[in-house]
Image (tube, rainbow, N blue to C red; front, side, top):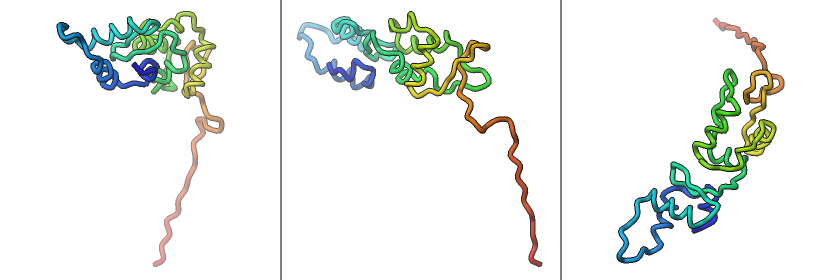
Length: 151
């Protein structure tokens, strides 16, 4: 099995095709997809599988887990996302990921930046919020137009 599949970069159908390419003994009935992926994970050691039947290393780094899971995508500026909710989203995609157990909001903030998600921790609200761009605020942009006639 390729390392690409173990790092979260392999689509489910490609992974199953790769696993099914290994010939089973003639006397053995074909395994269900879920059982086949579970067996592959247990044989690889240090590997788990997601509900999407993705194989991933249990030491997958937080930045890569955030990038692959897209857990921080679509966070709204008015509500943000709590530390716990963000970790829950990652755990839903990668159950059993050990690196998340002792993660602090500072480490998660650094991982978000590395993963390309511009979110900052708001200590008052205890939530990650999208970064505000300098020069943008609540000021209204004024515009005018003039209607002229050449008649």
